[in-house]
Image 1 (tube, rainbow, N blue to C red):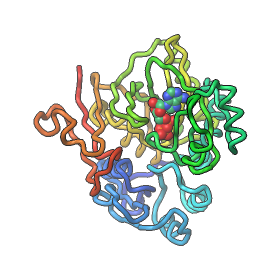
Image 2 (tube, protein in one colour):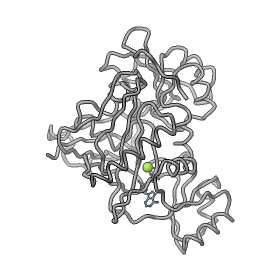
Image 3 (cartoon, protein in one colour):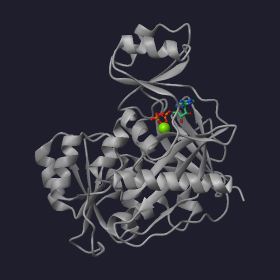
Image 4 (spheres, protein in one colour):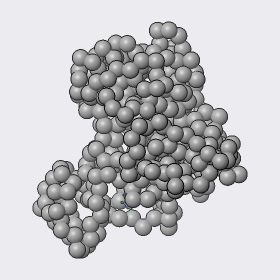
Length: 362
Ligand SMILES: Nc1ncnc2c1ncn2[C@@H]1O[C@H](COP(=O)(O)OP(=O)(O)O)[C@@H](O)[C@H]1O
Ligand SMILES: [Mg+2]
């Protein structure tokens, strides 16, 4: 767990902020840091890294290149990450050399679905019925007890719906097990939900904290397609959700930002899905919909600047630009009210997030 910090990190020549991961989230963290006068140093493996164009310095290295990680951590006053799957050994090494926010306990929890669910349950959340699956015997037993209906998800390294397969009574469980790489998994009950929502909590190293308004999310094939925010929730349900989210964050010793993905059932119950201790796609609308975006707030929290609840300036929608998006989206460049963000990725791939559009509804 990190120490409390007495004085804020202010922008000056010595105070360079470290960013782990060179994707679009890293890019938008760096842009927010730059807006606040901070210099940034990016660490990421070589590749198609959108963040490289907007940082002050880049170190290319693999996540297990300890020499390069040490060199990087010696050059920054603190580091944050857009990438939650940094190996724990590397995170520990970084944490010994510089302040890493969020801390490694948070990352470990977010990396392993079974740990994440246990921590959520401990914090008062309900989760879908789930089983830890270590081999095909476990899978057969658990599937039986769920009536051969569920989602098998790899216990780690899944994102954007990758690393998960739905099962039914006709599924060949052995084939599915192999298709997911014969690795530890969780089998989850498939929930019939009214809608998907997400909440974002943040806490500065000066101990102040707050929430963004809640987002309502629409997925297609496991990948976020659209968000509408703020989502209106029953007042008591919102209060309870915030209490549990704070409890979870407290249990993890969180500083920085954390998104919690949830399912709202038809009876009003809210069920935990997963956490992301970093900027989250479902809060990209805050780039235009709030005075401080999730990236601005992340920078404030890691630098120990005071924070408070963030309000929205109206109702917003956000569309993701996925894969070959040009022919599938209206108002790409023809209407300035549809604010287009392109991440500048060199290669377009099916299911790859290439950019997003923010649009004010009211
Ligand atoms: N137990 C479930 N019941 C119904 N839908 C689910 C369940 N788990 C996941 N999904 C759907 O798949 C999407 C992606 O799953 P998630 O567990 O969030 O994985 P990822 O790490 O890829 O985001 C969810 O946002 C939801 O739309
Ligand atoms: Mg998810």
